[in-house]
Structure formats: structure tokens, C-alpha cells
Length: 392
Image (cartoon, rainbow, N blue to C red):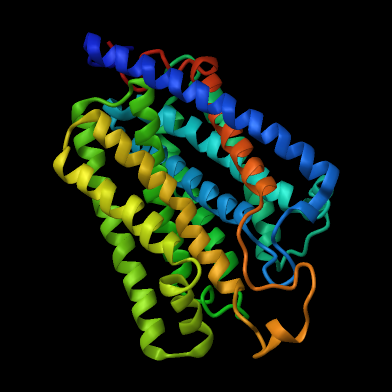
């Protein structure tokens, strides 16, 4: 068995990596501290301290859950593709991708768990669900997916990729597609929400998952020194292609929706473009999440730090994208005049996250970051990676 050669970073690069890891630790601790106070508020005040209500029942936590689960599936799919194609020079990145997928998955599931009215009854969805329910199937997908990630990381903890992972990772790739596509189907089959109900929704979820997942892996690789110039150049091109695909799909969805002028859908799209959440679309999504990383990737090709920064911005853009999915669809009057017919706490079509929601969300990010930072050492990702199929 031979060890795959990994270029040794220069002295300045090592200092940069150490600095980035310290920053990652500091941000993680700050997020966990904020989250601890948020958890205290969540379990002492319940949902009363949150700003969602009867008309807009989903908010920041659900948007974060969908974004993080998608990014997790994309990172896992990246690892599966590397192992399936036996791109041995990327095996170290693939192992890191599995760890990133686990961290994002844990953070996403914590968001949706805390959004439940009775968080400690979540197990009922597993044992008392309807087998015709997509959400019921997804609950079991989550269990299987989490086990696959943990087992995969455990089996590769010594830096050796078992032969069966190289031979059968295409099955894991198919599972990642089904996982991300089913997540999109949860929204795509909701006929009561015109913005969601579309055959394009699962496809959009797949492209977003791949984009956000690769972006998250690239950012983590830059932090841990797993990204060299060649990998930065190749993955930069991959992210540019996925960014272009995302823009094409969004243009198709928005332009046809506006041209068709179906009130329920065109009104939701206009809410995204010029409504109360315009800054999420134009500023966070397009400005910081598409244009800026696109420029970094175009003019910083092969630059490790710039590519890592672009990946981080793209991954962060996932939240803005899902906020654009969740909030505008819910902030519509299902009956004309409903907003003025009844008034009271929770009976509003406007929404902005409360302090509680921001704190809890930060805490979940801290949890995901902690898993990645500890897992990097625990699962031996700092070790050179070996292929189980190579020999002397």
C-alpha cells in the first residue's frame, strides 16, 4: 500500500492555516455561547419569544434547516463522486467533505428540532408516521443518512479508504441525489403555495445542494490546509458552473411565473424582488452570494485563500436562498383582506427573526463548527490519505 503524496505547504501558508483555524475556534465558541442563552430562552419561554405566528409559521430556523441539509447532501455527494471516480488526489478532500456533511447535517436537524412545538416527541414521526407521507419517508432518510456519515468517517479514521467505498460509492451518490431531491419534493408538492409547487423545485434543490456543499467543503479545506493550487483551480471552475446553473434555473422560475401572471405566484415573486425582503434577494443572494464570489473565482483562479473565501460566501448564500423560498410564499393573503379581518399576536403577514431566533441559529452553527473542528482530529483527517486499492 502506498501513501498518496500531498504537497507540503510553504511556511507562510502554514501560518495562514493556523490563523484561520484559530479564527474558526473563536467564532465557534462565540456562537455556542450565544446559542446557550438562546436555548435557555427557547425552553423557558417556548415559542412566545419568536416572531413567527399563525400566518407565517416558518421562519429563520426552517430556512436554516433546509439550507444546511442541502449543503450537507452536496458535500456528501462530492465525497461520493471522488470515491466513485477514484480521484485519489482528492481523497483527503473527500474525507473532509464527509465531516463537513456531518456538521451541517447536525446543525440543520437541530434547527428544525427546536422549531417543533414539542421537540422531545420527534420520535413519533419515525414510529407513528404515514407511509404515504413524504415527510415520514424523509425522517427515515435522515436516520440512514446520519448513520452513513458516521460509519464512513469511522471506517476511514486511519486515513485508509476501504476498497468497497471506492467500488460502491456510486450508491452513496444516488442516495445523496434522492436525499436532496426528496427535500425539494417536500416543498414542490405543496399545491397551496404557488411559489413552491413546481416540478422545477426538486431540480433547483439539487443544484443548490451541490453548489452550497462544494462551497462549504472548499471553505473548510482552505481553513485546514487541505486545498492546494490545483484543487482550488478545479473546484473554482466547478463552483462557477454551478453558479451559472443556479442563475439559469432561477431566471426560468421567476420569468415564467411573472409572465404567466398567476396572481398567487406572481405576487410571491414580486415580494422577493421588490417587497419587504428585497434586500435578501438583491443584497445577500445576488450581491454577496453570486456576484462577489463569482468575481473572486474568475480573477483569483488557483488562489487558495480567495477560492476558500468564495466558497464560504457561496455556502452562506444558502440561507438567503432558502429565506427567499420560505418567507415570501407564506407572507401572502390566502383570502383577500385576511390581514385586516383578524388582528392579534401572531396574526401578521410580516416577519423578521427575533433575538431568540438569531441566538439559537448561531448556536446551531456553533454546534456544526464544533463537530468539524473536533472531528478533524478525532477521525484523523490530518493524516495522509491512502487508497485501499493501491499496492506497492
